[in-house]
Length: 96
Image (tube, rainbow, N blue to C red; front, top):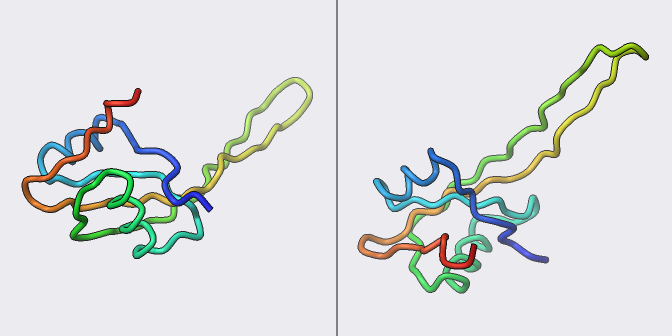
């Protein structure tokens, strides 16, 4: 089971990482905070002080077309906010 799926690289997440040393990741839905902490520490070689998680609900959308109403939804996922120790940083742009 892969814990870390991908880092979140948005304008808001980048500003949060520069100001507060807090990084965002999309993680496995079944992963807990301890597993996320160990995965980030082993993958990036930093010490993690705090992990916060949130389950993002799916967005439901409907469109009206000639053939009728089409409904769909996006996938649900789990997001983790990882606080790194002072003076340490994660370079997310190194392997793009």
